Image 1 (cartoon, rainbow over the protein chains, first blue to last red):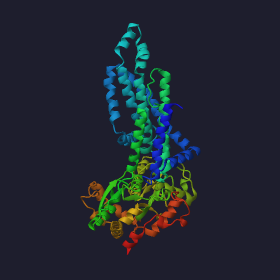
Image 2: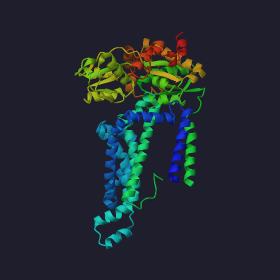
Image 3: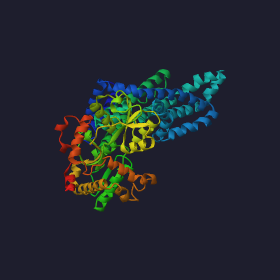
Image 4: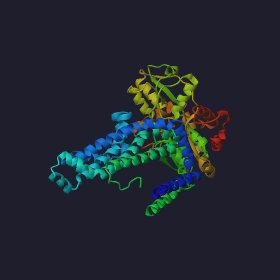
Amino acid sequence: MNRSLLLKLLSAAIVFGAWEIAGRVPVSYAFPTFLDSMTALFAMSIDGTLLRAYGETLRPLVAGIAISALLGIVIGLWIGLSEFCDWLFSPIFIVMQAAPLAALIPLLVMAYGIGLTSKVFVVCIMAMPVIVLNTASAVRNTPSSLKEMGRSFLGSDFDIVTRIILPSASPIIFSGLRLGISAGFIGAILAELKITPTGVGDIITYSRSIADYPSMYAAIFSIILLAVLFLNLLERLEGQLFAGNNRGYVSD
Amino acid sequence: MRILRRKLATALLAVPVMFGLAGAPASAETIRIALAETPSDELAAFFVALDRAKANGLNYEWTAFSDEELAIQAVLSGQMDIGFGTPYAAMQRSKAPVRIIFQLSKLKFFPVTTKKYEKLEDLDGQPILLHSRGGGTDSIANVIEDKVGITFGQRSYVPGSANRVVALVSGQADATIIDLSNKNKLMRQQGDAFNVLPMFDVEASDEALFANLDWIRANEDDVQILVDALLSTWRDMNRDPTIIGRETDPDGPIGQLPAEILGGLDDFYIEAVKGGLYSPDGGGRVAARADMEWYSEAGQLDGDPESLNIEDFWYLAPLDQAGR
């Protein structure tokens, strides 16, 4: 067994151990033990509750993240390449990033109703700014010597963007994606708690209202687990696309 | 090794943080009340009772939580002494030693629909708008299904009776269940467009005051003052609902509400008392029995309601004492 895996397991054991102890004390009647929560998680996975819930939750999450990633990188590139766009778009994303989203949800609901659209918007507002701003600053900071070299080798503008700027900016773009996608997960759950309870948000609120705290914590745990798995996957993808970027992030 | 040390340190840090959640022990002087919503006309009677209790030497402070479940959790973890709500499921499932001491209001809600429907049977298979899954209106819907022998179609959840009225008026829904004051307001303004479907009577609690049993026993005098004040207010209010408007402290949280709400206090309480929203004897055994049956039927309590022991859910001594 390699050392990093051992350390990862040890770290998990310590955190879950502390959770178990805190649940057994108990710190609160509303705080279940780790084992109870895992039993509830197992039960919910077996009877299909969790699967159905993720069927609901993943829709705004995947749509929002896909839109944010694609549009975010394109807009970010554009902002990074053109000063005009920088002035035009940057302020919007900086404001979006700073806005207290939970307080803006009533506005979104007023404009887009209580359906999928509002939830996708919440995910996008959470995820997009960091993707756009990271991409833009990475593109802007491409070493000018590399770009000059490209030009002196008679590279077209397209070549310079795809062969020089993108690979050089990719580590920062991907770190923006990682941050953006984590924020997107937060947004998806926020939307399900604040707009209408569906999917995982519904399990959380419903379990809480019938005092089934193990199920509530199991649902929260499952979404964290999914986010971590997804981020690991993203890092794998980065490794595939841009070998040489591997400096170790989440799977450290 | 450095990473290991850092991770160990983080984990060790997590333990005291988790223990810290347990909260400080209750102070004997000031009782901490967890409201399930921000002060509104519905809470005016409660604040009148609090003022009466204060005059008899009770010190209190209140915190408004954004929903009932948070208020319940705050009482369960000992950060608050007295909470608002009907935590039957929490009492049974989490084995928390929490007891109800006073019924504040009954679950008086009304199925309101567009002219499409005229009786509950018409709602078989039809979509309905409710407050939240597992909440009061959801339990009413469950019991309607049981008693009338129908099954609702898709249930959608929109918190807040006022918001459901908006959805109804704007045509986004054809059927919902709303509270007394919103029903009255809607029927006054647009009575020709909507029907209130006739429904069986519900005696179960909507809001009740509850506290940790150990805390109640350690603070019996304070609890007695509070329950005395509540019972006297609830009795006076049932005799003359306008006392709530008259006794409301203009400098208190209710007195600071907008003038339109204050102006409507009398009508609100006259209608509420007429509608039987407030039990003049604080609920007690009758309410407890009704709750056992209701919440069992609604799926919040497990087991045969006859076999459930009232004493496991209610602490009746202060109310008995106050009634003497």
